[in-house]
Length: 113
Image (cartoon, rainbow, N blue to C red; front, side, top):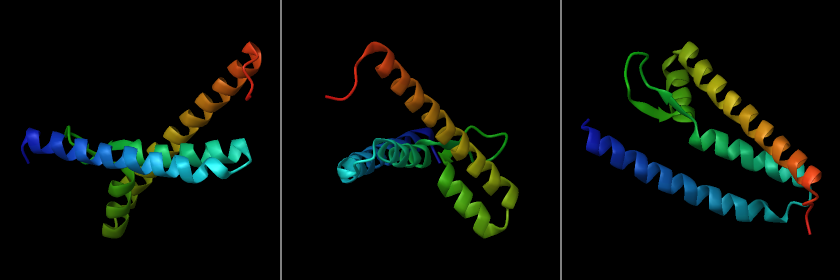
């Protein structure tokens, strides 16, 4: 695969992922529990936007959930678990950012209107 095709494929994927996030954001807008709503959105963002190397010594990236599912089906469970770990780390990072934002809102007195 040429680098231009690779970049175009990633741009198409990212555009589609942003569309999915926008739709999901609207779908979860009616959930009254703020923490649940934010956690669901963080899970979706972590799953869609976490990349992983396809091969260890290569520069080619792919979405971690696709690599994980594909390698799990092929029986390469180590690589599938590595992809799952990357998504788990991304979700944990999103939770830390959400908690930090919540603490800053409380400290600065910017609670929901």
